[in-house]
Amino acid sequence: MTVNRLLLGMLTPSSNTALEPVTSAMLSGLPEATAHFGRFPVTEIALSERALAQFDDAPILQAATLLAHARMSVICWNGTSSGWLGFDADRELCRRIESATGIAACTSVLALNEIFERRSVRNFALVTPYTDDVQARILNNYLDAGYTCVAERHLGRRDNFSFSEVDADTLRGMVREVAKSGPDAISIFCTNLHGAPLVEELEREVGIPIYDTIATAVWKSLRLAGADTRRVQGWGSLFREVL
Image (cartoon, rainbow, N blue to C red):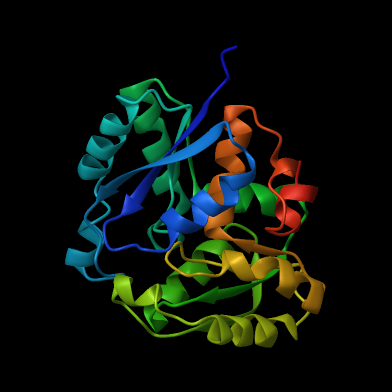
């Protein structure tokens, strides 16, 4: 009997060490689903010309094309760059990936925005590792799109590798702080943080939906691949409630 395999392609920043193990752990209960990763150079998150140039389409499309050789069911940009570049950057990237590969494409941030719409989220809280100016750009882009950030915490970091070294207690503390403002939802917004494994416990504690951007990438990828997201258990309300 042939099993219908779900091959989820993830475009990954080169200095990221969190999203691969976290993504694979999320999929562990779906034996037919596997994640496959294509890297391209990203080492710092900043608004300098050099840092922004890391997200030019050419190397990303090259990585997507290589993933397509393995006949992916979907290709996802598992990163948050359109938070500061503008959401149209992700829309155009998806269009170009689909044109180049013939495979459905999605991104962490566009998935998060879709979740906000499905859950009627208008006031949200944001947790990131980013610098002041990057954080401000993200907040402005969301405000322009009709979302109000009622609380935020960020760590002032720009070295992408260092994001993966933020410890669980620091992330718990940041989430607890922003939860005090009573947002409709909280986003842990960075795919090199180990926030997703904390979501289930923190949702129980604060009583607010928490959408981690590694989780949003997996959620949308599974939906595009035709899987039932409710089979992903223990990773928060996203997979149970946003259908």
